[in-house]
Amino acid sequence: MAKQEGITVKKSENLDEWYTQVILKSEMADYSAVSGCMVFRPLAYGIWEILQKNIDAEFKKLGVENVYFPLLIPEKFLKKEAQHVEGFSPEVAWVTQTGDTKLDERLAIRPTSETIMYDSYSKWIRSWRDLPLRFNQWNNVLRWEFKHPVPFLRSREFLWNEGHTVFATEKEADTERDEILGIYEMITEDYLALPGMVGRKSEKEKFAGAVASYSIEHLLPDGKAIQGPDFHSDGQNFAKAFDITFLDKDGKRQHAWQNTWAITTRELGVMVAMHSDDRGLVLPPKVAPTQVVIVPIFDEKNKSAVLKVAKKLESELKDVRVMLDDRNYYTPGWKFNEWELKGVPIRIEIGPKDIKAKQVVVVRRDTSKKRSVAISKVGSEVKKELEDMQKSLFKKAGEFLSSNMYKVKTYQEFKSTLEKKKGIVQANWCMDSKCEDKVKEETGAKITNMPLKNNKVLGDCIYCGKRAKTVANFAKSY
Ligand code: 87F
Image 1 (cartoon, rainbow, N blue to C red):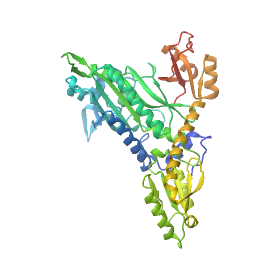
Image 2 (spheres, rainbow, N blue to C red):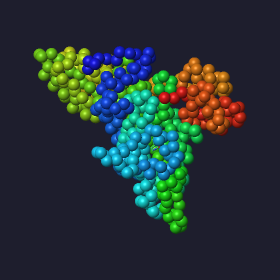
Image 3 (cartoon, rainbow, N blue to C red):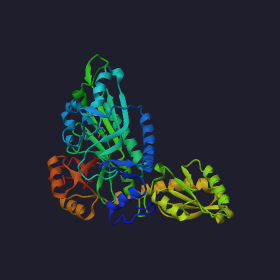
Image 4 (cartoon, rainbow, N blue to C red):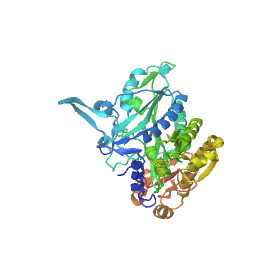
């Protein structure tokens, strides 16, 4: 593949192929020799670092501390909480041998760290004085899914945060739910410009080890829902399995209350799918490693004069993540294409004529709008454009979500909406998993979650007609 080759299929015509081309050709990521294990190139890793830095700062405001636990987990740990691994065991990869020697006990490559962390927690937590204990780790996990792997959206190895917290009371543990979901909502909306539906998972869809699971669900351009960050109220389930107890203020031994929560590099895939276009990546300015690229336009005669102004401008734009592309072995047109493909939010063009007129040309990646801006005003204008682009991407994605959300009252309406429109269908539900199963069987749609806000139930279950207990979001999902 020639390095400069652009995207050759349209987003509207073949989303999957378009997505793959955007990821590969923008040089965000690449495949590796192992299926499902992808390479994060500097562009993708740079985005992840920005996300991580901002999320981590929010966790720290809550008093969460970072830790690192081992990658390898003894088999006996995974077996301790039966419900935990049930259903997941086919996805666990094992280390069975070192050199030519077989291990006495197999070691799992972590698919998630509950078991290894809680083994330590049970040793460290003795009294109410040791609580709350709020630990998080930023790491990689491996889940050998058998569905076709897709970079970011469904990779076998991925990066995430896993928060594992312990409290003395159920009430304190529950308070954390809104704190963490609030952070995830803020990050997905304000940074990734991705709207989502926050809600509780059904009994069938929740994590088996949890008492209740919550998620933020996104809608992809093809009308399929995809799960984003999640939060699990584990109640005392793990505390009982791993013997995490403490002496309360009255000297009584009690089991602790726990939560876990995660946001993964899948979000990068959702972001690419939502905002990018037929010319390549479109990055929300707040997560773009390079927010502004300056492309000088020169020939041998005026090179030094143009570069001098370009360099001065670069140093004046220090408040934003700016880069001067002064490579002289590519033409300006070549550079324009490259930075468009890589999703840089703003391009500034400076040529000899602009210098004479004391202006530059500012081009926005999302709208392609070009305008001339006086050099003296570039700093403030660029900041305004970046903010405007950030808002505009979120607004557009929000409009897409709301125009693909349907509220229905009857099962007839439900089925025809799913068939004709795709997207999310909100309907009343009795909360019996028999109805959930039947709907899935008959329409292919599952319950993504039950909205936490605006969940006023007025009516009967979409399937059985008995009194409904909740509003549920149904969708075909990724
Ligand atoms: C795959 C293999 C083994 C998901 C797995 O979501 C175990 C598991 O426990 C497993 N896939 N899960 C559920 C993970 C629940 C929970 N863990 C901490 C989270 C948030 C972070």
